[in-house]
Image (cartoon, rainbow, N blue to C red; front, top):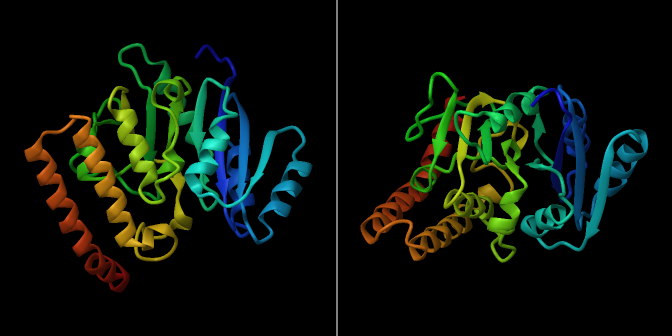
Length: 274
């Protein structure tokens, strides 16, 4: 890195997030290290005070490069794509409006992109003090776990607000599928994993979903039926691209159904065990 300033575009889609959007943007501004952030905030048709709070934040932080896009409600994929069209920096990071980065997130992740012993195109991390589980295996020296299509199909562990990727991925993979409303982030990661080096850092560097359990409480993740449809779409596309064979397709299909029917029980256990 040679102590040079690293430019990073940060894509933040917003929909009715007046309770959290300022905290999300502050978490970018408060990052440690020698970085220049191009923050791109996309208001996806919010009906609350989100737009007003974003504009106030911009006025109160004139030294920060912030771009504010307003559009009619089109969904999170369309919002992210609007931001990606403006991302002209070497690296791109994602952050959702109800999430926040820990101050050392960028400082911990970016050096891996400059390693000479192996290549990293896309790097995620853990969040909410979680650790990397099976089937991922963490290298004790690098603290990284290699991510593959099959591992993603077993367990979708990559949380969008923990991700940083090289800009060149946009030219080679394209953008988010705006027709897909659920598991759209997993769809994008799977497409990237086809031809790029993806890793997961075994450090918790973000707080996602306001620290809530990842399913069964609120938002899109609570709609398990639609999430399952999204996963099945992703699985079918991977099969059609011949990245998995027929036997593997049915194994992943059955595994998904088992997880789908077990999630309500797991949520009940999690809620009552607290």
